Amino acid sequence: MSTSLNKKLQPSVAAALAQWHHMLETRDLSQLRSLLHDDAVFRSPMAFKPYVSAEAVTLILSTVIQVFSDFQYHRQFASDDGLSVVLEFSANVGDKSLKGIDMIRFDETGKIVDFEVMIRPFNALQALGAEMGARLAAYLPAYKAKL
Image 1: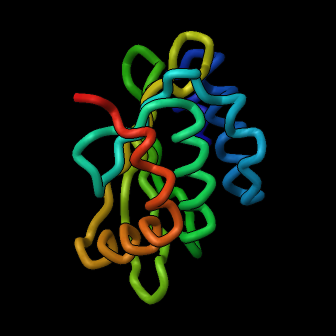
Image 2: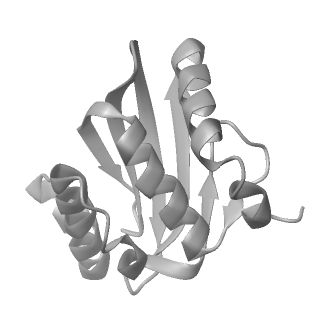
């Protein structure tokens, strides 16, 4: 992570983000739950309604890291208040290449409160949705927000 980005982030957010990057580099999300607020929200590019709870976010992110191959972050941006980041990434799902962004909002203690993902192109998003659906369709409805 760049030094200039670290200067913009709240110290607790910088520490949590460093832990997040380490988990992805090692492909070990066993400590993810410690980074999440109990009421964390995940906003999927495939679903209108978000998924709510740390358990839902843990389940989704722990699964998607298994689905993605060649995952890497390229650029990072921070909000002026130092509580939010946007991380640009690329990955493959089967034979489809994708680009996307993770928009992550933290609270003042460095816990993730909102994790939103956007992905393109559409055929790669469809491939990701199909693979995630095959793995999680039986579990995710219980976590859908009641809007």
